[in-house]
Image (cartoon, rainbow, N blue to C red; front, side, top):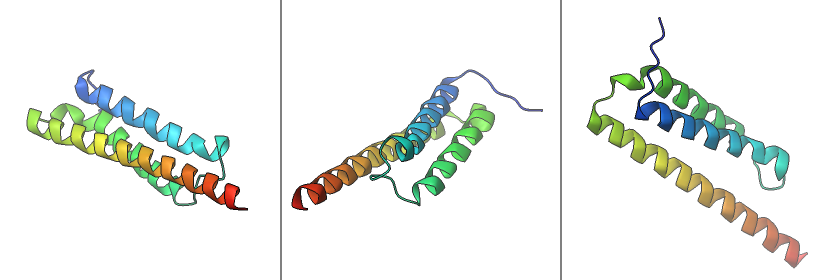
Length: 96
């Protein structure tokens, strides 16, 4: 039996799923910025969000807060990484 409840953990998992789908769609939109290992990290993120959907209802408030911080850090570092990759590509295009 799969027990999915619509708590804040459901929203957290949906935010992470959307972030991972956007991260994967970067391969289609701007292939010069994406790398091969992005598929691995996207798969891990989607697996993590599925676990949050199914088993997130068992989290007490302090564990949920740690998961919120973890997701915020991962999405923030991912955003910064993509931005820096774009700057590197742009700088490389200007030099050549």
